[in-house]
Length: 531
Image (cartoon, rainbow, N blue to C red):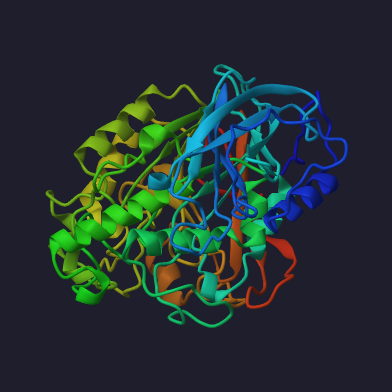
């Protein structure tokens, strides 16, 4: 792993920035003595401290990035403690953390219909460069955020990134996020289950969710706000740009398109119309609270989340949405139940439009690495001894025709250096990918890195053994662990490295981080090797 980089024009003391950003995560107003004055905001008083949910950036381009904040002096109130009127929010982007070299500034209007959130799409920045940003509303000054643009087309710098998923507030502390921030990646991919929808007390008592199971827009907004108050998550958002995609818990566990997990009327799941209203609320709140561009604002029950991000000639990231367009899971979503329903040609996990888009993205890539950040276990997961294929029916095993279409395209079009990034399953796994997982002699097509959870499942255990049946039935699986954490990666012209970073506990604060296992994929050579 190469050390974190800083801008050549603005060397930064990492410890100093983290101390400042850490205060930002606690809701402090920063940049006192010595800070250059920000432009005067439009008239209008804002009550209290409106920046208690911090700042964030996302979806970096070579010339731009999205800047996010939400005005919420009382984050858990239905209106966030804001008056029912638009508020002018000014933003600035600078080369230095004291804002002596401001390069861009502008104004956005935070409106009640969007929970007074800001999604500033800043352009005109330099490629692969470090910037600092902040907001002002009335007399209130936000915390400072650090962000970084993507490399320019045709250039091939090494890119450091990290990815994570599954952060349940009730099951632990977000220590892993703080360690990610300390490593200052170029970009963070969050692969879903950014929050959980369950009612207070449903998942443990390390910490307690606010309110009942999410169903209405107000409830989804309050839950997002609660998560944003976590100082470790706030620090990470203030340190690196995010690329987000959702899984199920941002709306409803294991839902598929407009089919909910169950038909509980109390959760708004008893009719398709009621679940559509619930999904509409969930999608609206998700867009409001993520650093996504305005063009992705949901329309009714649809939010276009799959997208392509190019990081020069080093890597093309094709970000998927495996939840919004899928057909219902086979066999009632039962675990390790296999049969012809898994091979239903009418079943889909991506939908035809997204499938075609992914194929275009892969075929047009001129990057060394073709990386697919997505949510659900991609490789075959057979936990049944003998000839039965088993399978994880909420994952790609439940949609084997969809998976075969993707891997068939990779094989037939000779898509090199194909890497899938996965979350969801609360354990670390590493898998090699081939079109026929039952025939280990067939050609390797790529690899899958699966990150464990940030907290979901509690502390986990020290085991690296999922059971002999897993090793016997899944020869493509190379690694397993049961701790919490994340994966950090470096991609370059020569290789892709992956370090599985773990913490030994999350039910109390302060766990140190360590590398449990490292892998490398050499350019042009499919399959993982020990690093």
